[in-house]
Length: 61
Image (cartoon, rainbow, N blue to C red; front, side):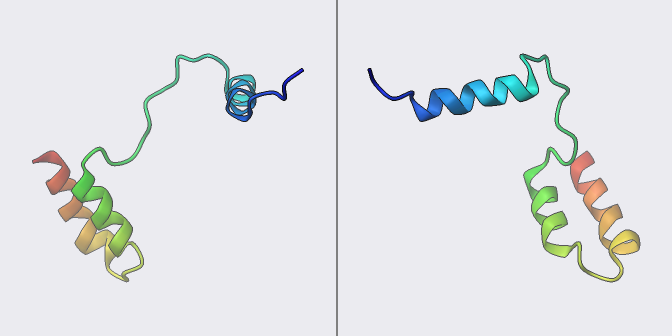
């Protein structure tokens, strides 16, 4: 008898935990440039007043 396939075991576990879906769409940024800027600059002190509005404009363009 062969050992169970690790990939199959993982897939079965994920399905067991999450179910079969449908799943809601992921939240967050859908614009790669905005996601990179957000990740790079979120520690800055003036994030909310300076960077956030720019990221929103970038995403909307």
